[in-house]
Image 1 (spheres, rainbow, N blue to C red):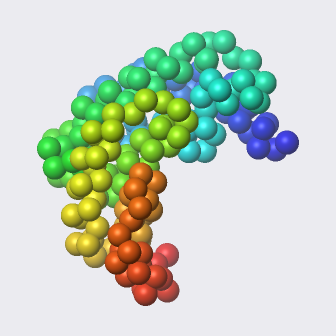
Image 2 (cartoon, rainbow, N blue to C red):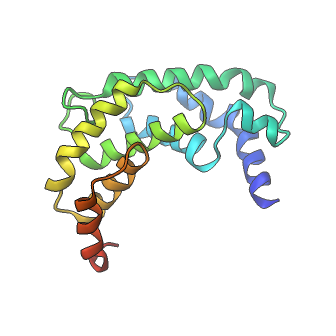
Amino acid sequence: TVSRMCVFTRAETHSSTVAPMASEIDRKTPISVSVDIFVFCFAKFRINPNRMQKLNIENAKLKADLGKYTSKGLQRLYSLQHGDGGWGWWKRDATNPYMTAYVVYGLCEARRADYAVDEGVITRALKYLDGAIPNENNLDTRAYMVYAYSQAREPKAEWTKGLYEQHKKIN
């Protein structure tokens, strides 16, 4: 199928393109690059050893390295979490509501792909989002924040009701 070919193609190229990027990430790299790697691997293609086996994808190097890169990526994201539970574009900048939602989404996708994710990190992020969602004036950002929150927990009814009431204004 087309989706199987897409997964196969991405999985085959992963070890030569994404994996080296993950190993080269350092403290000078914006957090968005770390999360982009997670979203690429988990959200779009759900790359994990079990999925590779189900799809008959044979890539020994990718299979061997995937856990190492995932662990390194998770540790980097954990280290970049701010004291308020959110994330910014960098370690020492202001917390950004959209970036926080993006990281929560990536962590939830990693968890769905059967990787162990620190629940305390997600809990702190959800606490941040819980306080930030009602105060977010940009409807598009607020909608994404609620969506990311909903990947981990049931969103508050007033959030979804408020978004529905203004749905024609959301892009």
